[in-house]
Length: 292
Image 1 (cartoon, helix red, strand yellow):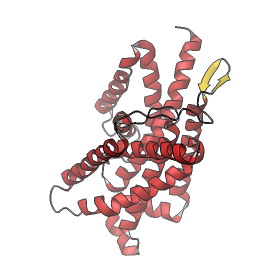
Image 2: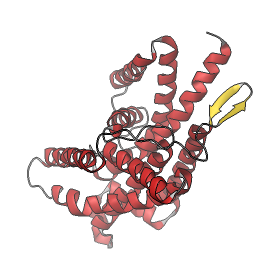
Image 3: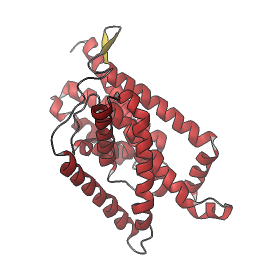
Image 4: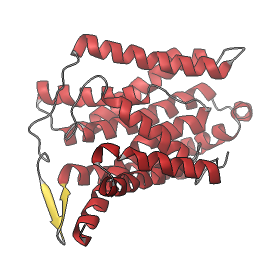
């Protein structure tokens, strides 16, 4: 194993880690806002990838150009899911945690079943795109352009999210609602409106990730399952309720995955992720950056 090989593997892991972080940030945002784990998060990613594919297939819109459209569509979808489904689950008088879990889990099964019915289980891919198949060489390190652009999109999206949450009135309302949803009602903030916009924002982030991933991943009804599992581990690793922790956790997961693939067969690369996660659970149960 040469130094060049190690650097190449870590660079690839960093790029994928940034995408993992973007996938996980939306999940962390919703959990931090409402203490609700969206078990349909992977299916949201799957839907975003299908939207990207059909925009390309029917309207010849390149995935990079489609990304803002997919993000906007997923924002509307996420807000609608809260208003039409999750809002009512949160009104449960008993076992509210289990009601929320089964609600989003049932939503995941429904979305996957509808995708198999309408889109069939066939694998689809975007064979021709502006970025597909291109690589960039930097100091002897070859970086796939789709993953590189995806990493830049992830950084830009996280930066925009951070600015939005810290510098805008709605961002402050979002933070206040996270701290005390009951108290904000006393100052005229509509909790349901904030929650709906929070779900929309989290879904828009997963939409951006799905649009980029559609360039270099096969698209099929179960595609979100593996990414959802990584997202749950990433959020737990970074710390529940911490958006920054989810993004940083995604980078850590990507680097650990790449390192494990250098030591073990590629099919066992996930072992390193779960080993690091278990280590963090034993040493710091609330996650690396968590506060709860």
